[in-house]
Image (cartoon, rainbow, N blue to C red; front, side, top):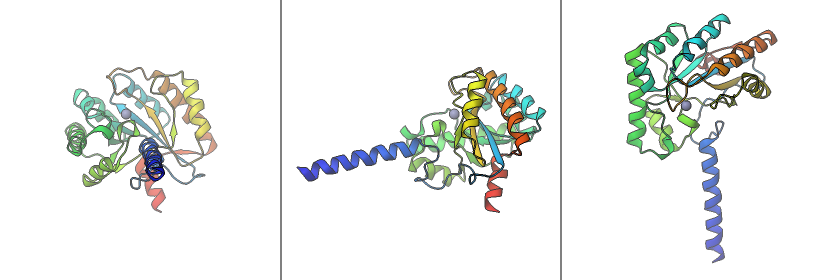
Length: 238
Ligand SMILES: [Zn+2]
């Protein structure tokens, strides 16, 4: 009985740990996933999820252009089909575009067939809208499990997580987003923000735009360089 009880306790703990790892952006159990550079680098990578979004994505492009900063955007395929012109504007402005699935499901609950379909459908939508784009992939909700990573790699996609989050998905005031991000910056960070919302197009991201403007204005004079994920990853390999 005791052995049985212990086995139960161990597997419950293991399951809890696995669950935590599958949701933790810096968890590395399921294969190497890029989450930023070593602490102390002077590079920062802004990443924006859940676009293209009307009208906030185009406004964000204006903010980034003002500062001459390039960022990385993880787009939802079905939104790309609805607004291919916004997806094109992102790419034409020199930003990097990556795959954030077609419908933004919780991939942890999906079969491999569905995972594969979500990734390939988003890839086709991006291909139709902008043509050549990056092989970067960010799982919705940051949720990973071995099947997700296996399918992503089969399709030649590189999973990209983050180590700093603005907690901006429910649109808090800009100064709160700015403070949350600033408090986590150590150098070499991948910063998660949102220019869209996974539930529908039209989510109000005005506060994220203001926070973006303030964050760049604050960290650039301190010697930080804002780069895309491929630029940051290149630096890691050097
Ligand atoms: Zn998302």
